[in-house]
Picture 1: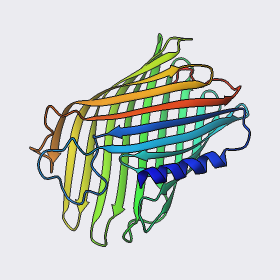
Picture 2 (picture 1 turned 120 degrees about the vertical axis):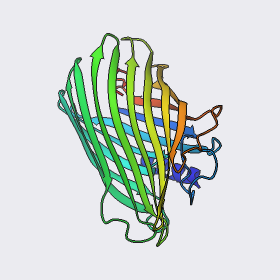
Picture 3 (picture 1 turned 90 degrees about the vertical axis):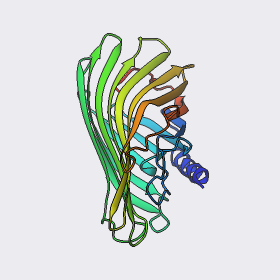
Length: 302
């Protein structure tokens, strides 16, 4: 079911961008991981947090520039918290400031509401080569959880960073929330709160860039049926992301994050994962550029 939805969304995006373009980039990524609580889990976890609940997903996007200052990105992704998303984002670049805005759709996340509209906005300010800061807010539009199948998707992200010799350092805070009225009496909420320090290491002209990540995240799920129960898993994470340019048009990307220490709180108190369990999030993808525009391999903030 998830595979067919991903394929349908990818086909729609490619059809919308079939017109000839000058520097079109097509990006794809396959995703997997077990740092996640299943969407369909209907009650609190019994026993230790399991390491065999594996998330499978994908992301595909197309992006291009329209003139010197305006660019767009159309994408589909499967997210372990937010589920299925289709988005269209327009970015206006003034050099010292970038403003992005556009609609997104929650796609086929419930039978009763196959499409759910929302709005994404972000602002990035930069002193080129010195420091930068950005803020992003995405939220579903319309009413709240009034009937079975209604849901709300939210993202908030704040980051700030600075440039050093051959590296970009970034401090980030991100939250993701997904609320859904499962039945007339049961509401569930998936939530991720994440705090990270990233170091983007690069060398001008080199085909490989690396991003190292150290951080902490709290993954939780709440079941509210008059009385709320919440499972929360805290994790200290260590990760890396690589971007390898194989030619003028093709780049390969890979990322892996692992939990070096995880512990349960609230409903998972005393039910921490087996210390020998390998908890991870991973992705493998490629970026292909069509046309003679400028390559997107220049280093930038994560």
